[in-house]
Amino acid sequence: MTGPTDLTPAQRLFGDFAPKLAELTDDVLFADVWEREALSKRDRSLITVAALIALGNKEQLAAHINRAVDNGVSKTEVAEVITHLAFYAGFPSAVSASRLGKDLLDK
Image 1: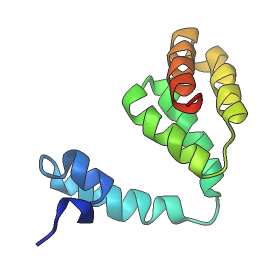
Image 2: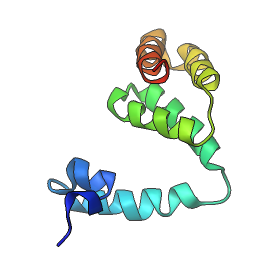
Image 3: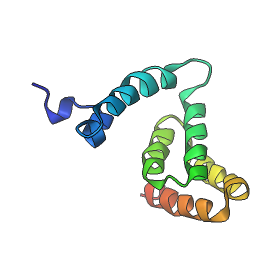
Image 4: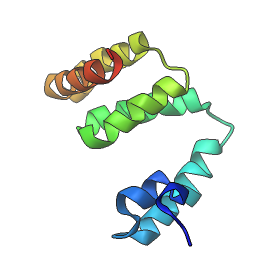
């Protein structure tokens, strides 16, 4: 029997509601796309954080800012991405991302 500690983050978050989406997240997104060698995980993290800021997706952004730091992105670089995107994604998106980044990275 599979216990809660055996579940992936996707399975824990929404696997009971959307099991196929959890499967695709685990098997395609994280086991394939994130593992491709053409871009480093660090670069993928920067791209993902930028896309999530531009889309205003704060819920996913928190996890990916933490993942970016784990992949070698510095606090200063996260702040610089946010500042840069203020001019491309809008100030409201950048301010929201800054507040979230500050809360996450100033601990």
